[in-house]
Amino acid sequence: MDGTTITGHDAVKAYFEKERQMLDEHGSSITFEVFRVNLEAKTLRELQGEMLTTIRVDGTFVSGTDTVEAVKKKVRPLLAEASQSEQAGARAGLNIGDADRITLFFSGRPMQDKKLFYADHFMMLPVWVQIVLHSCELAAVKELTDKLRHASRE
Image (cartoon, rainbow, N blue to C red; front, side, top):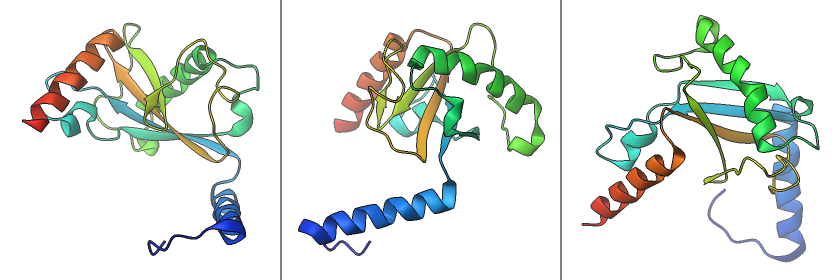
């Protein structure tokens, strides 16, 4: 957009027009963007690293009763398959082992395992969800994130 603030009925119409365009372009899909945490990072930008691949699935891949934890279990084989496929645009670092942990991020926040994927998050299809792979506890990733944020302010 051009930065113009639209209010009232026109704002609602503009919002739904944008949503219609997204639906026309991407359908009722979930696009998972896959990253791997870089525990050697010196900056926040390095922490997430480059996107390794994207995996697009139909919105029905996730049911209305699926928790985030259930979706992570469904995604793991897709990650393993993507790591074997050159067509997926996979990069080094995508290989996923049994010890690797998966954290899903939506709207800049980690999704909690026990929450329902759809019902407990404000999302409309199509939607983009980040998959962050890491080999340590999420608490260690959060600690490093806080450290790097603090260092960037100095």
